[in-house]
Length: 384
Image 1 (cartoon, rainbow, N blue to C red):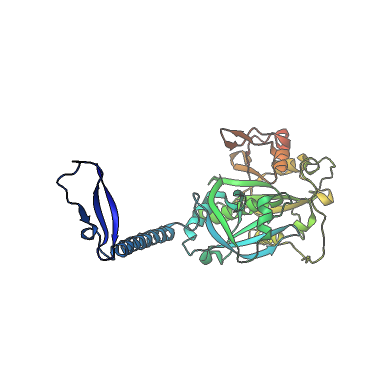
Image 2: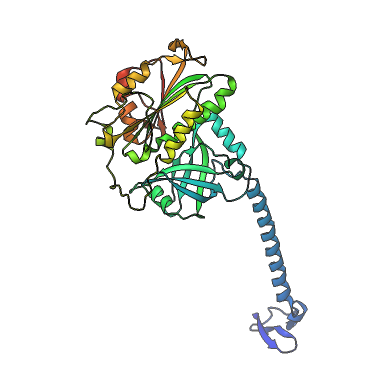
C-alpha cells in the first residue's frame, strides 16, 4: 500500500511524494508530484484580495439598498418604530409636561398627519427601549410650525409607577424617542352636530383633537357643530385659570370615582415651579372658546374643590336642546349626538362602565356607570 507524504523543498516549496508501504498498489504512478504546478507564490494573497473586494461590494450594495428603503419609508408608520427628537418640553403642571417631538430623518409628514386628523381621534405608541414596552399617547392639535418640521405635541403626565412616562420625563432635550402610528381610535361621523366630551386628566388631549376635527373638517361642509367639554382633574393646578361657562356646575359629593380608583399621588411642591395665571392647556381651551364663540363651552371640575362630574351634572347637559347654525332651537331627535369619555380607567368605568376584552381585542362593552342610569337613548356613546 502507498500513501502521499509532504516534503518541504526550499525551491519547489511543497512537493508531494508517493511512498510505497505495500507492493503493487500504484505500479504505474510517478513517485513524486510537484505541487508547484498547482500552487504558485502569491495565490493566497490574490484569493484574500478577491474575497475582500467581493465583501466590500456586497456591503456597498446592501448599504445603498437600505438607504433607499429608509428614504422611501414614511417618517411615521403603523408597522415600525420611527426615530423622533425631543426638541422642547413645556411644563403643564408639577406632574405633567407637553413634549414637542420632531422626526429625526427629514420626510413628508403633512399628508400622514392630515389623513389622521381627518379621521378623528388618533394616537401613536412611544417605546421604552430598555424594557421593550410601549404606551399609546394622543397628539395635541398641531401648531403652525408643525407643517414644515413635522412636529407633534403630547401631554404626558409622570406616573410614579409608569415605566414609559418615567422614562420619557427623564429624557433631556435632543434625546431620541421611538414612535409608531398613527392608530385611529375613533372616527367622528361627518353628520355629527353635537358632542359632549367627558375628560379626566390627560384625557383632555383627545377632546382637543375632537375640537380640531370638528371645526377644521365639518365647517368646510357648512355645518358648525356644538361642543361641550367637561374636564375633571384632581388638582386645580392642571386647570389653573379656567372659567366655567355653565353656572353652578360644582357638585359636592364625597363618594367619587377618584376615592376608589385613583391614588392621591405625590404631594404638590411649589419650589421651583412657576404659577402662571393660566395653565398651558387652559390657555388652549380658552383660545378655542374665543375662536368658536357660541359653539364651544368648557366647564372645569376639581377634586381638591369637591367639584365633580356627577349624574346630576350630566343630566343637565343631556337635557339641553340643540342649537342650529342660525342660533335657533331645533328638534334634538333629528340631530346626530355623540358622547365621548376619555381618561384613566377608573374615570371611564365610573361614568360609562368598563371596556371588555375578547379574542385579544379591547371592546366597548355594555354601557354602565352613571350614564346608564340617565338612559341617553338618543346619544351615541364611545369610550376612548
